[in-house]
Length: 157
Ligand SMILES: CC(C)(COP(=O)(O)OP(=O)(O)OC[C@H]1O[C@@H](n2cnc3c(N)ncnc32)[C@H](O)[C@@H]1OP(=O)(O)O)[C@@H](O)C(=O)NCCC(=O)NCCS
Image (tube, rainbow, N blue to C red; front, side):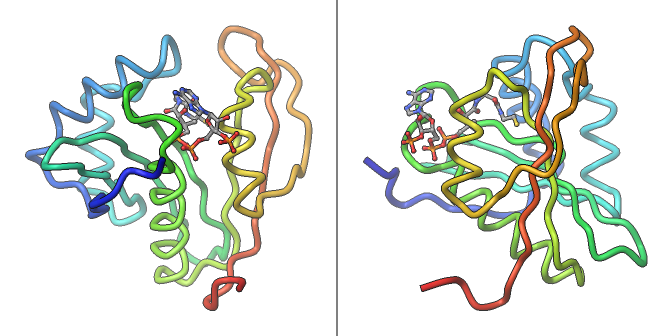
């Protein structure tokens, strides 16, 4: 069942420790370090979004932009284990797409581990298409997939 009364907003410095806890709980490797989180929170070319349920941070994602490019990159996305399967990821994804559009981007791209079927289902359900296979893309040698979606201002009916 979707998590009701979920709020997605831009992250602030006060979210830092919850962001680090979520990152540590969600990823065994390729983690965003505390220093990188600080950098992303202040950067003009990154947007960190957090999902809150009853004031608890239950999800986060990071989008990167580049000046002069219409391509944004979803760099990271994680949902707290006890909140997974309740469409929190979908709401973060929607907010990431809106942020990309507001920054003048028309496409959102991301990479995902070949074995991460939950994430692939989330992206495919939301209109992302496989663009390329990425052999041994990850630090531990796992293959990946690159996905992309053309963004439109008017959501599909
Ligand atoms: C991938 C992730 C962000 C999805 O977030 P979410 O809020 O659970 O997303 P959704 O509710 O839309 O569910 C996505 C899929 O997860 C699967 N799922 C359902 N319940 C689940 C649970 N309790 N635990 C894990 N996955 C579950 C389902 O297959 C679902 O797809 P379906 O309902 O269409 O079959 C989340 O699982 C996560 O944080 N995983 C660990 C970090 C990660 O892999 N990040 C993505 C890197 S590309």
